[in-house]
Length: 267
Image (cartoon, rainbow, N blue to C red; front, side, top):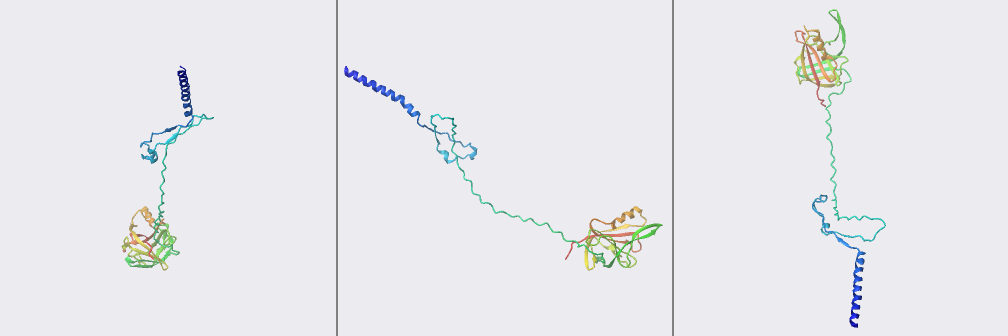
């Protein structure tokens, strides 16, 4: 009987000790850091990586669970997913291409401005080779009315004083008789578009090319027609040569007016 009581006493002590061990075990483990395994991986829908998963994401990332020990101020724990480092390729800069712009075409010189009045005129197509002198305006009476008209040179062509010299902007006007006093411009009406005319200043030739030949009535026409004809010998804003004479050979019922423009300069 005494032995049975001793055994029961010992079992009681053992049971009490076992109960005490069960109560203290959670408290010990609660103070230890626990490890949580993250098993959720990103999917191919993550367009920030172009649908390709980095090798680093093949293994789950282990993030320690923070200790239960309270702190003086709450802290926020951010769980950061694994990222991949994509090395930027080393780009070798392409050699700089230097573009050389094509130069603007240099305009062909037409005429150098003359420093004197014309002294000679030639036109190979009609065999013209004549001296040029400078003529002025004069006053004369016609029907009791004083008019100012240009002089016409005798045995020479006449350059209208004050008009443009060759090579200058303006109208270079030269006139001559066609059937009297030298007949200098006798064949002027035979010039055709494209024919060459050379006006000389000393030893310097100025090359012109015929553009248009006009035949204008001057007899039996209204005054406004005569006035309109004068436009051919007025100043212009371009470079041109105007040659004037009468027509036909047996009379002077019309004016022959030849308009020519500077031809490209040839050294």
